[in-house]
Amino acid sequence: MALLEVKDLSIQFGGVKAVQNVSFSMEAGIVYAVIGPNGAGKTTLFNLITGIYTPTSGSVLLDGQPITGQSPNALAQRGVARTFQNLQVCMNMSALENVMVGAHLRLDRNLLKAALCWPSIRRRDAELRQEAAELMLFVGLQAYINARADSMPYGALKRLEIARALAMRPRLLFLDEPAAGLNPKETQEVDALVRNVADSGITVVLVEHDMKMVMNLSDRILVLDYGKKLAEGSAQEVRQNPDVIAAYLGTH
Image 1 (cartoon, one colour):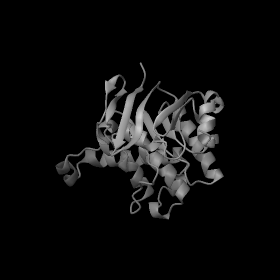
Image 2: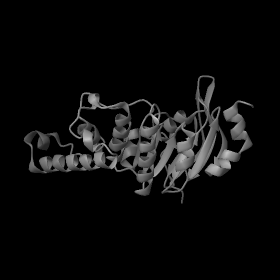
Image 3: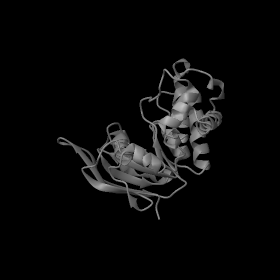
Image 4: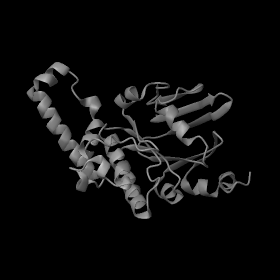
Protein backbone atom coordinates (compact mmCIF):
# COMPACT_ATOMS: atom_id res chain seq x y z
CA MET A 1 0.00 0.00 0.00
CA ALA A 2 1.21 3.49 -0.86
CA LEU A 3 2.07 5.77 2.04
CA LEU A 4 0.40 8.76 0.39
CA GLU A 5 -2.17 8.85 -2.39
CA VAL A 6 -3.48 12.00 -4.04
CA LYS A 7 -6.51 11.51 -6.27
CA ASP A 8 -7.84 14.14 -8.71
CA LEU A 9 -6.99 16.97 -6.32
CA SER A 10 -8.25 20.41 -7.37
CA ILE A 11 -8.76 23.86 -5.91
CA GLN A 12 -10.20 26.98 -7.45
CA PHE A 13 -9.84 30.55 -6.17
CA GLY A 14 -12.59 32.53 -7.84
CA GLY A 15 -12.06 31.89 -11.52
CA VAL A 16 -8.47 30.70 -11.10
CA LYS A 17 -7.89 26.94 -11.18
CA ALA A 18 -4.72 26.76 -9.10
CA VAL A 19 -4.52 22.95 -9.02
CA GLN A 20 -6.42 20.81 -11.50
CA ASN A 21 -7.09 17.09 -11.11
CA VAL A 22 -3.61 16.19 -9.85
CA SER A 23 -3.07 12.52 -8.97
CA PHE A 24 0.01 10.67 -7.75
CA SER A 25 1.11 8.22 -5.08
CA MET A 26 4.33 7.48 -3.27
CA GLU A 27 5.83 4.65 -1.30
CA ALA A 28 7.43 5.10 2.10
CA GLY A 29 11.15 5.76 2.39
CA ILE A 30 11.77 7.88 -0.71
CA VAL A 31 12.50 11.49 -1.62
CA TYR A 32 9.68 12.73 -3.84
CA ALA A 33 10.14 16.13 -5.50
CA VAL A 34 7.50 18.46 -6.90
CA ILE A 35 8.86 20.89 -9.47
CA GLY A 36 7.57 23.33 -12.06
CA PRO A 37 7.84 26.92 -13.24
CA ASN A 38 6.81 29.79 -10.98
CA GLY A 39 3.06 29.76 -10.49
CA ALA A 40 2.73 26.09 -11.37
CA GLY A 41 0.83 25.30 -8.17
CA LYS A 42 3.54 23.55 -6.16
CA THR A 43 3.03 25.29 -2.82
CA THR A 44 -0.75 25.23 -3.33
CA LEU A 45 -0.52 21.46 -3.73
CA PHE A 46 1.46 21.26 -0.47
CA ASN A 47 -1.15 23.42 1.24
CA LEU A 48 -3.94 21.11 0.07
CA ILE A 49 -2.22 17.96 1.29
CA THR A 50 -1.10 19.39 4.64
CA GLY A 51 -4.44 20.92 5.65
CA ILE A 52 -3.80 24.62 5.01
CA TYR A 53 -6.40 24.63 2.21
CA THR A 54 -9.49 22.48 1.71
CA PRO A 55 -9.70 21.16 -1.87
CA THR A 56 -12.58 22.00 -4.18
CA SER A 57 -12.57 18.34 -5.20
CA GLY A 58 -10.45 15.23 -4.97
CA SER A 59 -9.01 13.32 -2.04
CA VAL A 60 -5.83 12.61 -0.08
CA LEU A 61 -5.16 9.29 1.63
CA LEU A 62 -2.48 8.40 4.17
CA ASP A 63 -1.94 4.67 4.65
CA GLY A 64 -5.16 4.18 2.71
CA GLN A 65 -7.18 6.32 5.13
CA PRO A 66 -8.72 9.63 4.03
CA ILE A 67 -7.15 12.77 5.46
CA THR A 68 -8.63 15.31 3.04
CA GLY A 69 -9.27 18.63 4.74
CA GLN A 70 -7.94 17.58 8.14
CA SER A 71 -6.24 20.34 10.13
CA PRO A 72 -2.45 20.61 10.31
CA ASN A 73 -2.63 19.66 14.01
CA ALA A 74 -4.61 16.51 13.25
CA LEU A 75 -2.16 15.60 10.50
CA ALA A 76 0.79 16.21 12.80
CA GLN A 77 -0.63 13.61 15.17
CA ARG A 78 -0.63 11.19 12.25
CA GLY A 79 3.03 11.87 11.47
CA VAL A 80 2.86 14.62 8.84
CA ALA A 81 5.12 17.69 9.27
CA ARG A 82 6.21 20.51 6.99
CA THR A 83 8.27 23.64 6.58
CA PHE A 84 7.27 26.75 4.65
CA GLN A 85 8.70 28.94 1.88
CA ASN A 86 8.90 31.90 4.26
CA LEU A 87 10.56 31.39 7.61
CA GLN A 88 8.13 30.52 10.42
CA VAL A 89 10.64 30.93 13.24
CA CYS A 90 9.86 32.52 16.63
CA MET A 91 12.57 35.17 16.62
CA ASN A 92 12.06 36.14 20.27
CA MET A 93 12.87 32.60 21.43
CA SER A 94 16.11 30.68 21.59
CA ALA A 95 17.04 28.22 18.86
CA LEU A 96 16.60 25.35 21.32
CA GLU A 97 13.13 26.57 22.32
CA ASN A 98 12.12 26.78 18.67
CA VAL A 99 12.97 23.12 18.21
CA MET A 100 11.10 22.21 21.40
CA VAL A 101 7.97 23.84 19.97
CA GLY A 102 7.93 21.07 17.38
CA ALA A 103 7.37 18.54 20.14
CA HIS A 104 4.31 20.33 21.53
CA LEU A 105 1.98 17.48 20.59
CA ARG A 106 3.81 15.21 23.01
CA LEU A 107 3.72 17.69 25.90
CA ASP A 108 1.52 17.04 28.89
CA ARG A 109 -1.17 19.74 28.66
CA ASN A 110 -2.48 19.33 32.20
CA LEU A 111 -2.12 22.93 33.33
CA LEU A 112 -2.58 22.11 37.02
CA LYS A 113 0.33 19.68 37.02
CA ALA A 114 2.41 22.18 35.08
CA ALA A 115 1.55 24.94 37.55
CA LEU A 116 2.54 22.72 40.44
CA CYS A 117 5.77 21.75 38.64
CA TRP A 118 5.13 18.07 39.17
CA PRO A 119 8.28 15.98 38.80
CA SER A 120 6.90 14.34 35.66
CA ILE A 121 6.60 17.75 34.00
CA ARG A 122 10.15 18.69 34.96
CA ARG A 123 11.45 15.37 33.66
CA ARG A 124 9.55 15.81 30.41
CA ASP A 125 10.97 19.30 29.96
CA ALA A 126 14.51 18.01 30.53
CA GLU A 127 13.94 15.17 28.06
CA LEU A 128 12.61 17.56 25.41
CA ARG A 129 15.57 19.88 25.85
CA GLN A 130 17.94 16.96 25.38
CA GLU A 131 16.05 15.77 22.32
CA ALA A 132 16.05 19.29 20.85
CA ALA A 133 19.82 19.56 21.42
CA GLU A 134 20.34 16.24 19.64
CA LEU A 135 18.24 17.40 16.70
CA MET A 136 20.26 20.60 16.46
CA LEU A 137 23.38 18.47 16.29
CA PHE A 138 21.73 16.33 13.58
CA VAL A 139 21.04 19.39 11.41
CA GLY A 140 24.49 20.87 12.05
CA LEU A 141 23.47 23.70 14.37
CA GLN A 142 25.30 22.68 17.53
CA ALA A 143 27.08 26.04 17.55
CA TYR A 144 23.72 27.80 18.00
CA ILE A 145 22.22 25.75 20.84
CA ASN A 146 22.41 28.70 23.26
CA ALA A 147 21.71 31.38 20.65
CA ARG A 148 18.61 33.47 20.17
CA ALA A 149 16.93 32.86 16.84
CA ASP A 150 17.16 36.53 15.88
CA SER A 151 20.96 36.34 16.07
CA MET A 152 21.26 33.43 13.63
CA PRO A 153 22.10 33.75 9.91
CA TYR A 154 19.39 32.98 7.37
CA GLY A 155 20.90 29.67 6.26
CA ALA A 156 21.00 28.40 9.84
CA LEU A 157 17.36 29.42 10.35
CA LYS A 158 16.32 27.30 7.37
CA ARG A 159 17.90 24.26 9.03
CA LEU A 160 16.38 25.26 12.37
CA GLU A 161 12.94 24.96 10.77
CA ILE A 162 13.80 21.45 9.63
CA ALA A 163 14.95 20.55 13.15
CA ARG A 164 11.66 21.83 14.57
CA ALA A 165 9.69 19.75 12.07
CA LEU A 166 11.77 16.69 12.96
CA ALA A 167 10.93 17.25 16.64
CA MET A 168 7.38 16.21 15.72
CA ARG A 169 8.78 12.76 14.86
CA PRO A 170 7.14 12.67 11.44
CA ARG A 171 6.89 9.77 9.05
CA LEU A 172 6.22 12.16 6.18
CA LEU A 173 8.05 15.50 5.94
CA PHE A 174 7.12 18.23 3.44
CA LEU A 175 9.91 20.71 2.72
CA ASP A 176 8.87 23.82 0.79
CA GLU A 177 11.95 25.31 -0.89
CA PRO A 178 14.47 24.49 1.86
CA ALA A 179 17.34 25.91 -0.21
CA ALA A 180 15.64 29.14 -1.26
CA GLY A 181 17.90 32.15 -0.69
CA LEU A 182 20.91 30.07 0.28
CA ASN A 183 24.44 30.38 -1.08
CA PRO A 184 26.10 27.36 -2.73
CA LYS A 185 27.76 26.16 0.49
CA GLU A 186 24.51 26.41 2.46
CA THR A 187 22.65 24.63 -0.35
CA GLN A 188 25.13 21.73 -0.16
CA GLU A 189 24.54 21.54 3.59
CA VAL A 190 20.77 21.35 3.12
CA ASP A 191 21.22 18.80 0.32
CA ALA A 192 23.20 16.55 2.67
CA LEU A 193 20.71 17.12 5.49
CA VAL A 194 17.72 16.10 3.36
CA ARG A 195 19.54 12.91 2.37
CA ASN A 196 20.31 12.18 6.02
CA VAL A 197 16.66 12.70 6.92
CA ALA A 198 15.58 10.29 4.19
CA ASP A 199 18.22 7.78 5.24
CA SER A 200 16.80 7.90 8.78
CA GLY A 201 13.55 6.42 7.43
CA ILE A 202 11.46 9.57 7.00
CA THR A 203 9.73 10.01 3.65
CA VAL A 204 10.51 13.46 2.24
CA VAL A 205 8.36 15.46 -0.18
CA LEU A 206 10.32 18.37 -1.59
CA VAL A 207 9.46 21.55 -3.49
CA GLU A 208 12.66 23.13 -4.74
CA HIS A 209 13.82 25.34 -7.63
CA ASP A 210 17.47 24.24 -7.44
CA MET A 211 17.41 21.58 -10.17
CA LYS A 212 20.86 20.26 -9.33
CA MET A 213 19.66 19.54 -5.81
CA VAL A 214 16.39 18.01 -7.04
CA MET A 215 18.09 15.72 -9.53
CA ASN A 216 20.70 14.68 -6.96
CA LEU A 217 18.23 13.84 -4.20
CA SER A 218 14.99 12.66 -5.74
CA ASP A 219 13.83 9.10 -6.26
CA ARG A 220 10.68 10.31 -8.04
CA ILE A 221 9.72 13.70 -9.47
CA LEU A 222 6.30 15.22 -10.19
CA VAL A 223 6.22 18.12 -12.64
CA LEU A 224 3.40 20.67 -12.48
CA ASP A 225 2.58 23.34 -15.04
CA TYR A 226 -0.36 25.76 -14.74
CA GLY A 227 -1.77 23.64 -11.92
CA LYS A 228 -1.81 20.43 -13.95
CA LYS A 229 0.34 17.32 -13.80
CA LEU A 230 2.75 17.54 -16.70
CA ALA A 231 4.98 14.53 -16.03
CA GLU A 232 6.14 12.10 -13.37
CA GLY A 233 9.07 9.71 -13.20
CA SER A 234 12.68 9.29 -12.24
CA ALA A 235 15.15 12.15 -12.53
CA GLN A 236 16.43 10.73 -15.80
CA GLU A 237 12.93 10.35 -17.24
CA VAL A 238 11.90 13.85 -16.25
CA ARG A 239 15.13 15.40 -17.51
CA GLN A 240 14.54 13.93 -20.97
CA ASN A 241 10.78 14.59 -21.19
CA PRO A 242 10.11 17.00 -24.08
CA ASP A 243 7.04 18.49 -22.36
CA VAL A 244 9.13 19.31 -19.29
CA ILE A 245 11.84 20.85 -21.42
CA ALA A 246 9.23 22.96 -23.22
CA ALA A 247 7.67 24.13 -19.96
CA TYR A 248 10.97 25.25 -18.51
CA LEU A 249 12.15 26.88 -21.72
CA GLY A 250 8.78 28.53 -22.31
CA THR A 251 8.33 27.01 -25.73
CA HIS A 252 4.75 25.80 -25.34
